[in-house]
Length: 140
Image (cartoon, rainbow, N blue to C red; front, side):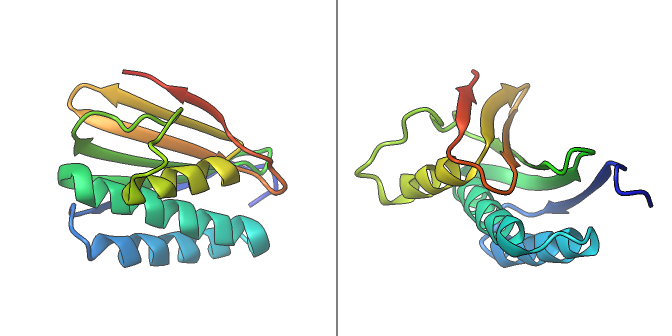
């Protein structure tokens, strides 16, 4: 593989609590295979754990975790679930213990999008080394 190739991987998981550590291990293994480590790997593990935790709490069936490393070194993390209304990425409530994870993700992400497509919620987080907060877009 050349350094500029796009790499991608995904896994389907049940919307159950056991999926959080499974998704984290999947992320660790794949991102290390792509020779990415350090802060970007740690951020990816945390983001996946938070997103899958939300999906298992609010989702109603299986979920998908997609990872993609683009030619510019940006790591795209997408979690797709058949959940309820999309969480407001732009302004999660500060007093909700479960919404704190979205604040953490926003602090780590270069970009973040939450969209509804058909009967599923798609949450995309883009990570890069040395980012300083997310450009956030929420779509209904």
